[in-house]
Length: 210
Image (cartoon, rainbow, N blue to C red):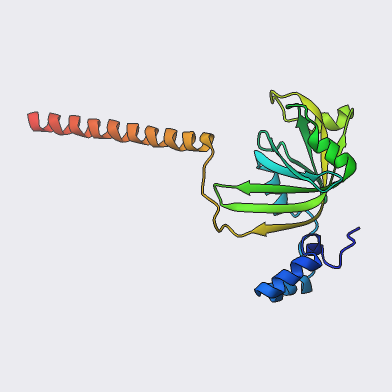
């Protein structure tokens, strides 16, 4: 259960609200609070956005509050929505420092940052996370099919609030596979046009010789 008066209070602490008031943005965010704050459940649109991600950032903090950000990637769909509050993914073996796992053992508070550079959209998700070890059934459910990575364990992320940012200052970038597909289609179109030009020139030359 959310202990805050508003879901957005997970980020808007009293200190944050004081700064918002001093800098002139408190009134607009107060209107968001009047509508109940941010959403706390995974909507169909959010689920679709989550499951198309290939690169995400997971933030945790240790018992002393020292923050840490870890990148996680995989094929589209490696992040799976398990229910309207829970996201799960297979945690692949990496450098085996286990900082995230240690942080979560001491402090379950976590944050997921998702960004789509092509569409210039970003989603922020606050919540808690936990590591699940030695659960073969859950691992099989979350492991991407035919993906060549060794799963170490599972991470389950429970959402308490989420918010979408505006596209301001997000550089537009494209996935290599998407660019390659677009260039391939362009090259095929050029080839078809060149063949059509050659055919028309051939017909024109034949007509001139008659």
